[in-house]
Length: 331
Ligand code: TRP
Image 1 (cartoon, rainbow, N blue to C red):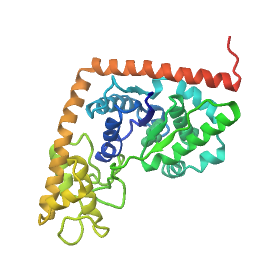
Image 2 (cartoon, helix red, strand yellow):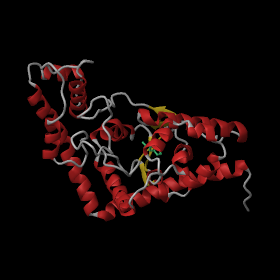
Image 3 (cartoon, rainbow, N blue to C red):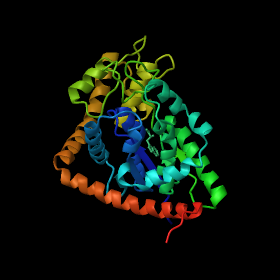
């Protein structure tokens, strides 16, 4: 039987946190044997907010190395850089004519980002979900693993796909968002009411980055906010401790019950140290492999070139079909 197709991408902006690892990359690793996977580095999405060019280039390679270091197998999956495949921009243009301004301007993320970047509400910001639809539809993805914040965009991609199919005949696979179980939402260590953010700058202890060294990880967990009382257990009245327990379970690979049992009678201080050590132990080999890949660049570059070729081949097939359906003449 043909394998179903998975598509996802991450922007090379900001530093990835343990939340990105738990919610996205770690789960992709599990999916790669069961599905045909396309994983992209979304540099074209990244420039919808201002980027420093040298920094963007550096982060692109770093993210590729990180994906692989986390266990994405570039020979099993198609791992590539979005801007290397021109079909993304080309399909985006066609899909723009199947997207209503009203729909695009109602997207929650567009509204949020317009507020945050009020000095630069560019067309790309509004077109962001249409480019995302192009990403997904080019590869005939059945499933799109995303965080809750991107679900609305996948739904728009579905609407665009159905609208196109309705007008021009069956062309696109209608994708479904895949909100993964077990990818517990990881909150800020300083404010458990908010998601751990990769662009957090105000409070340096709020986010644990995948690039943090052991001492930094331990320090951040030591300073993590806890709650009143002194028992380590889950509870609505214990958002800080519950978040730390979630992190522990994710990185240790244990159940919430097992974690509660393990920490029965343990004080907050020792508990936070244990969580920090567990996270640091998982990060160490990832950081080592990432550094190796970045130092011996040839291997990494060859993966990305091969990814580009395989992605471009699949994308070209879909794009040609679309061009035919909309009536573009070709010799
Ligand atoms: N917008 C996504 C994010 O920031 C990244 C992304 C770009 C993506 N293209 C995609 C995710 C296609 C899923 C499918 O998280």
